[in-house]
Structures are given as structure tokens and as C-alpha cells.
View (cartoon, rainbow, N blue to C red):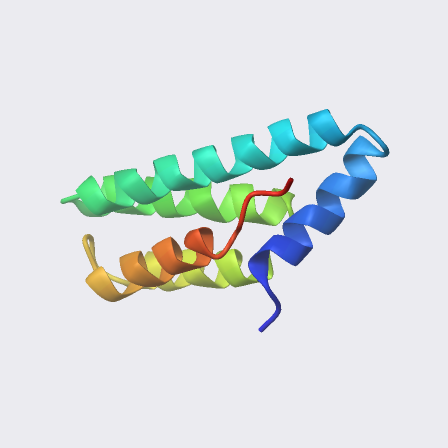
Length: 101
């Protein structure tokens, strides 16, 4: 599976052109939003909250063509609220996105 950051970076590069500052800001916003959904997933105790957070994560990932994250969000949608395996996998995928200089 391709490195998650590659897909996101390629999409952002097209959107931001030569504006490195905008690239960094949008990348940080993506990661912050994805981590917010991960936090909501982790705190979800009912199907509705779990599904809403997973769908939001999937939508965000789709916007940036992040196929690995889309697959993980789909996995969450098929799972039960609080599923620790998928939470760890999503966290690891987000952790793999290193900040750009």
C-alpha cells in the first residue's frame, strides 16, 4: 500500500501550486481534521456517533484521494463502536504522515 502522505501531498501540490505556505497550512488542516474524527471515533459509544465520525473521515480522505484512509474508514463503518483494532490502524496511518519542511 502506498504511503498515505504521498496521495495527500500530490493532491495538495496540484491545488496549491508553488505556494509552500498554503501547502503546509492545508496539510496541517487535513491532519487536524482527520485526528478530530479519530478522537470522535474513540469516544463513540453508540452506532450513530461511530458511523457519523467514520463517514466524515471517509469523506475527508476521499477529498484528498487518500485510498488507505478511505479503506480504514470503510473498515470502521463495518465494525462496532470503539473497535480498538481499527482505531489503532487509523492512528498509525495518521502518525505516518510526517510534517513537511
